[in-house]
Image 1: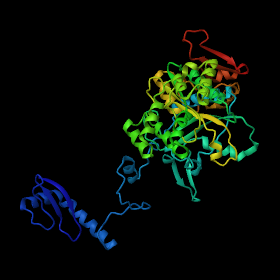
Image 2: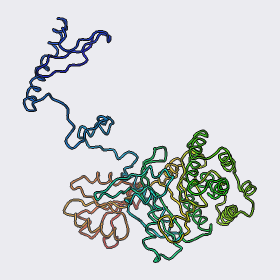
Image 3: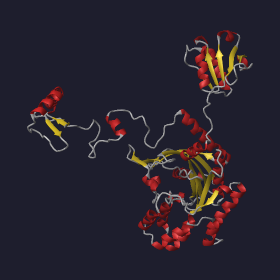
Length: 520
């Protein structure tokens, strides 16, 4: 027998629901056996009397029986309370210490890795003479919703601002760039080479290497019709990967052209607005089963013969096969062969792989497309990009402006570098530690720190007074400092600072020496 529920109000009998294997029950105002009455009275009487008094007081104030109400400022919800971990914390008025799901905190040890990676991005972009730019993370929602047939429109963090405008956290950077170029109009002198490192937000299903926010290195070239633009972008990507310690044995670049599929499907009636949704489905081949792909294509009104033709094209795995299907004089075939030829001259031909299934999911791509992948297929795409010659007219430009670019995320590449053990030791951020012997020498220590910093040294001036000297030495060792500068009374009177090299053994003659302040 177990006690399951006790509920009461001031004018009711205590309701006891007692079960014995679910067979016996006693409902309100029902006669309860004497032994149960005695057991209940002994066990619950103090608590019940207190509860009755509380209920009576509440009824006097409210004039009705006590009912739970939503917390002040919280609307009533037909679906009931949020029972998730976050919901329970909010109900208790506790601060949620975890970041928003899918987002990241960057502690100092994380920031030093992020900044190291970003510096690699900047260094490569600068070596290819790309200029930096940036834009607000908050953009008008219709900047992205104008591109139909894309999953990205379903993944945006969209809301109305206080002036009732539909805005969104940017899910990608290219439309922002197009908006900026339209704003400048004819003041822009083409061709341009621009780059940025932008934070983007998409409400996606999270997997290894995929979060709901990420930083993305974008490089774009506007005003170049030839595939020389794509080759330059591919050269920049392989340059970065090489600088990070990766080779063509670790990473490859899958290349295709959207026009391959387009040229096959147009004679079969898949043209205009019908083509982009097909590309979205093809882009998901590695995520969907063949049955799902077939069903999704059928849902678009694509017939069996056309679906079979799509499968045949997607099975092509080298340029020779593509040439036999489209012909050696085909413009798309010639473009792809040109890329391979220039890649050989540039020295990254061994990174390239032809893959007819690469079409990219964004609707604005018009020609060459590519994706960077790890050879072990442990992660999602590292980077993706291609040509988008019609983007500017989509946003209102009176003339087409040829363009090509890529987006290179920070999440997957860090996972790959960790797996390969290629992230360097970045823990050393302090070169010199300056310690005043006591507070009377604090000003002298400031002079020493200032002089060292003027020479470009990374100096940590100790701020905590009245610590033992041994504590300062231990602290300097923990932060991997190179030198510790002790400002002691006797030495400072002589214009000297005691300098100890922490990397030398204790018995080394240059381990510790006094240096004139003027010579620092």
